[in-house]
Image 1 (cartoon, one colour):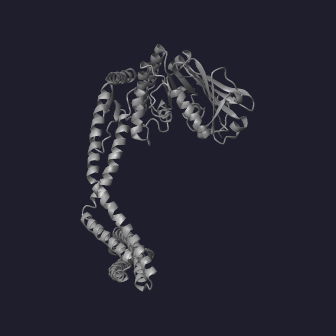
Image 2 (spheres, rainbow, N blue to C red):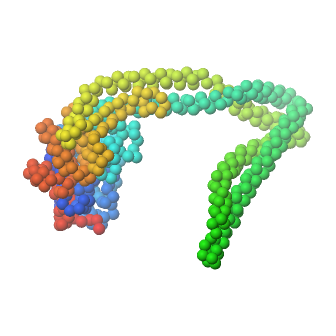
Length: 583
């Protein structure tokens, strides 16, 4: 897949405003004027346009721009795949649409293009760029963030900030051509294990009550049987005896519940009084501020002993409000939670009392039978809940066995993926040597790149992750951290070229701004350019200002046709879009 050119087309005026031709392989330098950095010539806008055409969101600078909408600007990226031209288009005024034309000559008549909704367009772009990769590769959207790095957040580390670490290392492994599925697959097993362990923990919390639950289950089952017998024989007298017994039991529980509610409400009220008292004391002490002002006005100072006593008392009560006050507030929240549960239980008990009262007041056989049937349904529901708990508890042994089987599977899968990782030793050795060579060519120093398979199987271990680390001398010094990322990305690009992968594209926006060593920067971009040129594969796009390299080196790159865009702002036509569209 080769990026061939980028066009800025005005649908209103039916003309191409700007056109940029790219080198099929090697360096593609987007060069800005020599003025101050971040000069607004459009270098980043050009990179963002390419990213937008490859499926990212529309750049913020393009949205709600009257001039761009009036001209009805359309961005068109021509790519070549297996000698066939494919055209990707995005219309600034229609950010929710994408346009694709496959084969033939370019056409500016949109009737000749396939029109897609934004989501469908991104799916089509992904298919174009990842068709020859593994069917289980990461999404192109996630890969795109690594092959198109921007200065805002792309150069803090080899993995991107505020992104999932598992996904980040998956993408890096993918870019180096190493199997990347292990951590994600093992995480699925760990998640299943975690769910079962939570269920087991809940079941085991019932262990102290299970005997009581089983006894209660048997007791209620006997009560249901007795009630059914009563309903069959219409033994009203026996039912009344049961109702009296049940009424007494429920009434006792209701009284105890009411007592607890009253007690808890009193405790909550006392806690609140204590909090209010502490706050009131602080407010009173703060009134001493007026006394301090009085002393300052009358005698010009505030006596040290009074001031010290005032400060000590103020600090003490403020501490009490912050510490004990917070404690009492937390206790109030806790008590309110208990009160809420007790109020619910109180409602349930009052409903039961009402039913028992109706049963005791019953004056007809029909009413008696209806009361008995209601009670059977009530008891059956209670019995069902108890049996569910018993059934859940009986699953304990099964869960323990399933958890152990999952642990064994995790260990087995970890071993298998580790063995698979070892089969990439040639790629890993080559990558580590290549990174060292890149650093040597750039700084004449040694650099280290390491790949490690995380084989620990504890819950907190990143089991299956291929952890990638690289380091250079003084990497935390000004600009060197950026250069480390540049060299790291170039390393995987070289490996993909060697492995003859289809996706051999890398774009760095603003990564050469901070590094001060102009010779090192030139050494690096010439090194990767020579590799791509000799192998006739791979495209490396970078943005630079003229003053970020030595003048002679800039002239060499211009002579070698490595500069694909000369951008400036002295004249509007020198800007990326050929116009100034941002105030």
